[in-house]
Image (cartoon, rainbow, N blue to C red; front, side, top):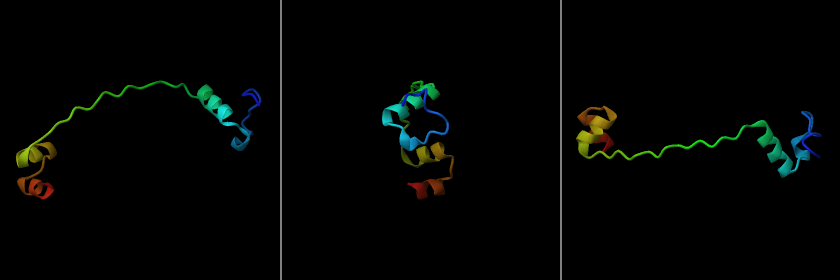
Length: 64
């Protein structure tokens, strides 16, 4: 069964894995997206927690 013979009425159960992948590749434009690496932002102490999260000293103590 070629992709030419596959119609909208063809059940997925009748497709082989190769046919299914070929169908997906033909329908979806595959583009590779490069995600930049996240840099770590470390904070220290209650002051760092307060500034990072924008909370009060009492709340920062609870989070610690």
